[in-house]
Amino acid sequence: MSPILPIELCTWGGEIPQATQVAATDALEAGSVLFFPNLSFELTETERAFLSPEIVGSSKNVNYDPKSGKVGGANVAAMKLHELRGLMDRFATATRELLSTLLPTYRNGLHQARTSLRPVEVAGRKQTWRKDDTRLHVDSFPSQPSRGKRILRVFCNVNPDGRPRVWKVGEQFDTVARKYWPALRAPLPGERGLLAAIRVTKSVRTRYDHYMLKLHDAMKLDPVYQARFASATHLFPAGSSWVCFTDQVSHAAVSGAHQLEQTFMVDVNALRNPASAPLRVLESLAGRKLA
Ligand code: SIN
Ligand code: FE
Image (cartoon, rainbow, N blue to C red; front, side, top):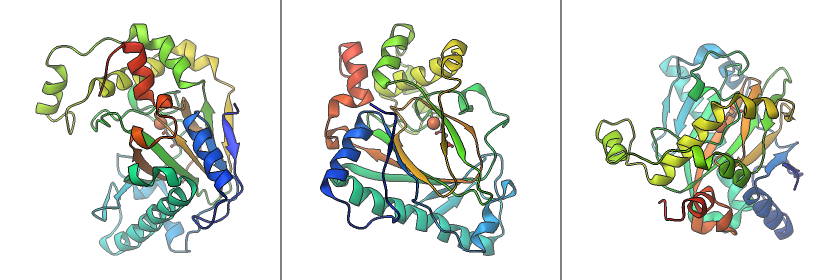
């Protein structure tokens, strides 16, 4: 199986043949990245002014909650905030339309989460090791337990100077999980409840969330693993988009600036092949339910 599946699409939504829908869903669940070389997201002249590292504070991203309409992390005047919200909301709507037509089987199990604009150059960014996404990892949110749900993300490179976003893509989830599983420590008694009580997490981590974060950490802290995939790079050109389950695909962002991203959470039961979910893979290694 190829790690990247190119798909010809140039609109966010609209008719998609059933064979393409099925192939896209199966490839995603098998751990591929769906790549749309000609799916761009147009910005107006005024919106292009937001493509500057100066519009964000220490969080490095502008974030947007499509449910409440709230914009966070932006360092812009109140008047401009309205335009920025408009841009974020248009991308949120476009990605929702794309997924509802491309992945119709997920319709009842698809939950839209945060939208982000990432205007800061990835290469050379000062980060703690845990936040350093130039190291290969699978996504796991430290403060927001997914409780077994999948993390599906839509990315669009909106770089105005034609620069690509460069990723590394590692190996299959079950290979990675099997490799690190023996080294992942079990949660301590009371640990997950305590983290929620002192608000480190927004809800109580399930055992699944605990092990996924441990796996994320183990990958980022392993220099041998990082070195092995040093040359496994993929270029996503300006004006292209891509979609993958980032809790499953071993990935790293090497370089690039100016990207839009939309996160969706997907119920494991909505998958065509639930056995491919990290939850089910880890449960088979643990020999017990984890969420
Ligand atoms: C990540 O999810 O690790 C970062 C992806 C990106 O910003 O390109
Ligand atoms: Fe990531």
